[in-house]
Image (cartoon, rainbow, N blue to C red; front, top):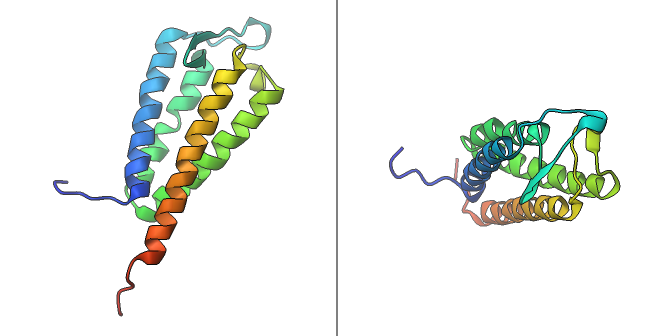
Length: 140
């Protein structure tokens, strides 16, 4: 794949996938607890972690990397990522134990990180769509 020059959305999908892989593994190391309900626990490293939060983060890695293989898929993934992370950030503002398995006592850091990731993905979508519109059309 020497000389591969993916689109902005494709490169961002790889970067976000790598980020999710890194922080998901770190999250499992920080707190591998899979408690539920009242026995849910959290330990903070950037955000509040437990096993569930780490696994949910790691589940986003394969779609991010697969999306990077095609420009349209990368735009779709980035769009999904922007909406999903924004939705999660708003949800966490109102529920400090989402799904009964995530324990988020330091909710502010989770909200900020989710909005930052959502903002990055939204910006990638806007930039990519503008580049695609500005690109010269091939004559068929």
